[in-house]
Image 1 (spheres, one colour):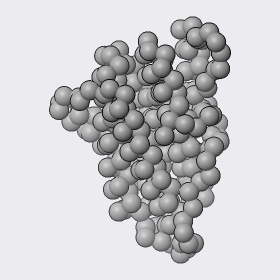
Image 2: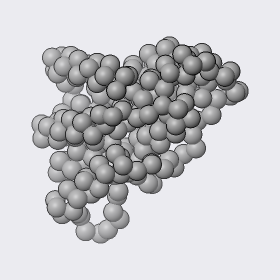
Image 3: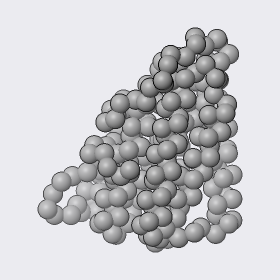
Length: 225
């Protein structure tokens, strides 16, 4: 958790803090990398304990659609963490968000690779998902660090439940996808726990409900587009 030394969101090692303009440029670079390049994972892709059975056409399409949704979630995670790192005034918290983005880069790379293996494509709306998640991340950060961390906790808890649902829906024979999703689920739980330890506040119920509704729209659309 919060430990991988590389990222789509670059961390510059320097004795002097980055200026606001430099942080903005880094965020823009992160967006271009998330949307236009093939990400590189630091950790090996999770592997199933045994080879799965060959997938039929229907199972392959369903697995591809579910992994496309998971890939969209990781595109959004890059945007959220980048925005929160950009907007916070706390250097330690900014570093925490940047390191969290590093681990999410693994997820982005794994899901992108699995999509290719399944003969499926990423969502055509990824630029829209990224922009929306970035805007939400900035708004959350502007509400204060405790609220920003609370937003992170609620997001990760919802993603954890979402991934748990995908483990139920993925074809039983698709062991490679299931191994990836299971590791992602464990990582998201770790992100939420770390944010809670860092001082996250509990979001009001209406905000949590609105987040769930927005996530439902996104995941339903990304399943097909």
